[in-house]
Length: 132
Image (cartoon, rainbow, N blue to C red):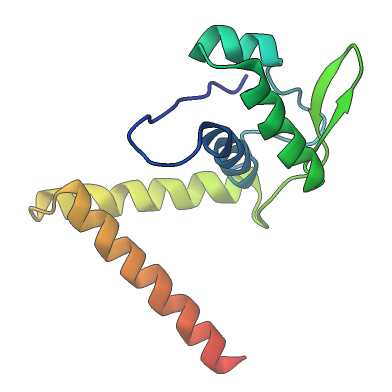
């Protein structure tokens, strides 16, 4: 089951943090169509937040067609995000973990790694735009 985490210092609204975490889990294949999200009560108990915050997040996900509520049963994933299979994600994650180890050994700190990674991602998508 999905365990939500909140970052009170992020400046991102709590309900959006929940939405982003569900989308992240969908992209990485941790959540699949048919999976049940934690109930609002479970999330409230875990995070000590207002139930309306959880319901707002779930309504947003439902509005986007990612989940659907089933009265008396819960909220269930309707569709996934991302194009790669779970096996492909695992392979790429392993390669990326090796790259991060190399970066750490080269003396990069987490912020350096994030900046370098973001730079490469942005550059690779700009190249894709130019060729389209």
